[in-house]
Image 1 (cartoon, one colour):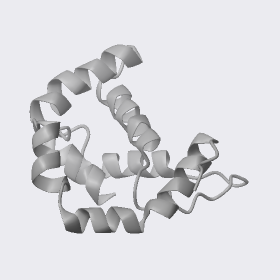
Image 2 (cartoon, one colour):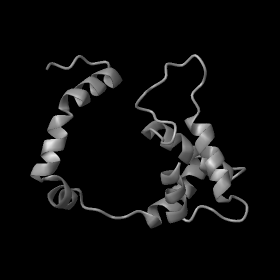
Image 3 (cartoon, one colour):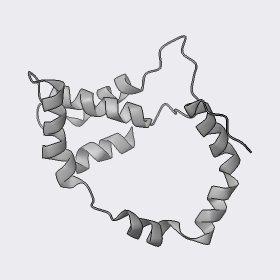
Image 4 (cartoon, one colour):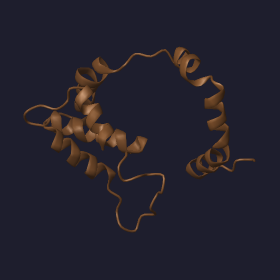
Length: 129
């Protein structure tokens, strides 16, 4: 929940009619797991999965820009709040400065078996060990 609040603050989405507590409510509504659903242990209650983050973006857009289509609302939110405040990063530079190091490699290699299982479960593909 803190990360969404930070994202909202950094993107300057909150205002007098849509304060931070309203974004907390959107987070809760987006992150709810209905009874009877398999509880996804990777989907922690205090964080959003990618698909939930996208849902939150749509919910925020529709509430912030009431009376327009979802396409117009999401486009406006992206154009007015998200893109202007997004950090511009070169992927190659990021990989070279942050990722291509032995200590990162050691951590990633330690989690390869878990990553393979997770990917195979999410993608319904059998991963050869």
